[in-house]
Length: 523
Image 1 (cartoon, rainbow, N blue to C red):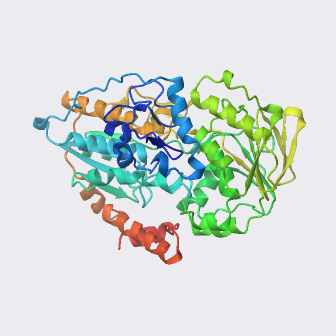
Image 2 (cartoon, helix red, strand yellow):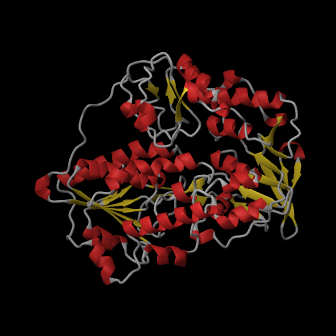
């Protein structure tokens, strides 16, 4: 018997650290780890100890015997990786990370943002000891895209938060939520009270879509739609026209697939997720029965991961249609293992017989948009290839994401990232996550990224580069009389939502209005 890694793998690498025979690849030391789509277990080396399964924070690992039917293919996908990349010894560094020297006092670090990369950074610093970490977020809830970006039906992915429980129970860790830097407190104030300030502000702004008609009503960035169905307070009052039978999604990354899947899920599947209640009700009455996913790339180099493509291809009640006009299926053109899998699955789907399902998703490749057509609001999308026209009343663009420039902070406008050197922006100011490396890599890619920034902070502290005036952030915020949501307040919100979910027969029912979140979080 062997263990198998499946679709919901987050690349967190917790399993790698626990594997006694080093049979999981790629590892954080491998050049392709950051952009790896998932991890794999070598079936010939696995000793069936179960350590990886216990360590996995997102329930992505099964024994062969336990595999659900829709995940059976992952046995061969794991084995196939090692056929292409034979297992070789991996060199794991035994060096202990540098610790803050005690004679310099407690290292005080403020992290602006509370998403996965911020959490990895906080955990890394806390494990070094002699550190005080303050996490500040403008929302009353933490976790960034884990709460407001990860698809609501990907509940196992959201379990990732559990790996931080032990570290975040430390008295050396504090949440200061519902506090906006730039409005309630300045970066300069944080720099005065902390040795290091880290920007973990993400890359949530949509890339601009410069085509005629892009400003018509009914055209929205996918980020807004995702935030709406995930209950982000800034988007709770948004509206989307779901009265059309066809929606068009521009882009073919994982977010595009998430959006397509959510649009096509039935009422029972929606209720089994933690989707915001207003979105559940609206989508349950949606008339959308077809989603066209149109991207400039072909199936081999599509930005979506093979695991997510495979999941959508096996979604019950949904037929997958491949427009062969812009697709090439030759796996030999692939440069990575996953690209070959994408090509093979695309070819298989293209040859499949119609299923007669009443819902379907159509993949159009090499499909650059020529224009959006309509008078006041979108009526159709015309593509450059063959002049193809798709009638629609809803267009969602998912063509990339950028970080937002911060006044006084060096910024690379071409990449949408903060300029840095191994996480260092300027003296006392650092960056981590997508604001640092761009919107690429899975959630687990935040761990080595955070380790690099943590190492830079500790090295600078030990070398006497960093200073602070010792002012306590909690005291400073209390003097400002701000309605701060602490870790205890977030726990109250979490309990409230889970209880409401249990009452409704759902995983949770989210509070989506700022005043409600603050009321529960500060009671």
